[in-house]
Length: 358
Image 1: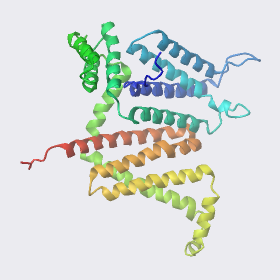
Image 2: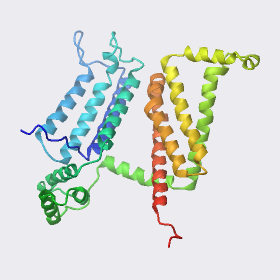
Image 3: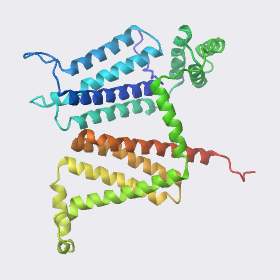
Image 4: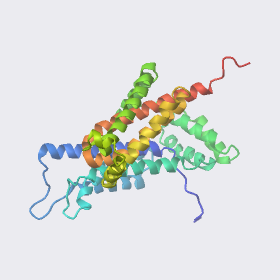
């Protein structure tokens, strides 16, 4: 056995992790809603209590056994679904295992769950983008697509994807030539039939791209960030300066000493939320500054502001508001998606040849 074989990344990992996380979040919300509606029933008797964390572990075990025992892309999708549902069911009870009194309603538990999901996304993104894919990785992912050929289930999208991977592989490698030859001779079964999740996702993407491409949307985005900047500054000012101060005391030089005392007296969560809000506001300020000079730069600054909010600020918001923060998080994710659509359009426009070029 050769111990020097490099680790090869799966180019489909992002898609699988997306399904995993969607199922995990759906499991948590479904469990919380069910328990709330049914009055938090317990499975067991006076001595035993079968926590639903165990069902989550069972689902994760099933997903691992499926991956070990069977092959094919559909198996990977089902493993992501079952594994995600199991992980959500498992981590929903994190409050019980970080407290001495097994408190399921431990307030920071929602923030802990959110932080775990953020770390999963960052880890997968780092694995995917941390270093350039090699020709060998592209080739192995193309060979992975041959499974669908053997199963006689290769659709057009899968075939096009494999041909793309082969185009990134070493053209002089005999395996590249052999796999390309097999693919050229293989007839695809037809266009892919998306499942319900992919249908909803694709329908949303098409409609949102149309909306995000309008001038009204661009103006609305800029207005939104201007208002966000003003509200952020007001929040910090009220929170650290104005509460409890008279108009006369605001004119006193000692007010800075008072502000410093109040900031130092804040809890870690309060300080962290102010810091992350200031950092997010800084990117908004830069975006507003660049909006008339370069829309691409401005949109990039706005994107970074939203990322700071999603990846950092919302950890502390979930700590304070728990599941009540979901609605505003969803709104921020929509803003982020819209910004990325706008950035892609600006980049595409910048790459177009000039009409006045010779």
